[in-house]
Length: 129
Image 1: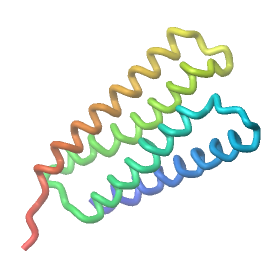
Image 2 (image 1 turned 135 degrees about the horizontal axis):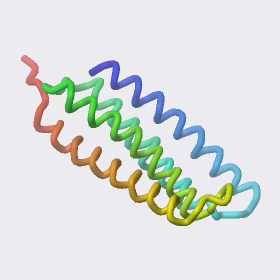
Image 3 (image 1 turned 90 degrees about the horizontal axis):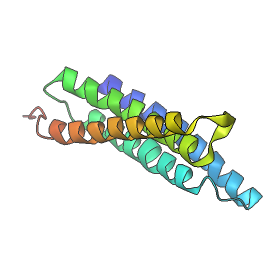
């Protein structure tokens, strides 16, 4: 479980840097088109992944497969949701509307599954003596 802890914390640090950069960019440019993306990067990317990283440092889960599914769905879902939101809201590189919407929905759905898996893991903690 400790390997998942550092993995999640490293990904959260990447999200924190991206979120801080976007916030700085918006403040400097006076353009706030990235506001919802910035908020989600910081909440699901930085805060959620970081808190899950701390969780895996503090607790051991009885099922390594469940923990792995939770961790990877959290990482993939956080990336998918925020990139999909960027595609959907700002249409960079001429991304087709259908592709942007599907990317956004799939990313958000994977993240939703991750939150459900996290709920399950909280009931599968190994008891400490």
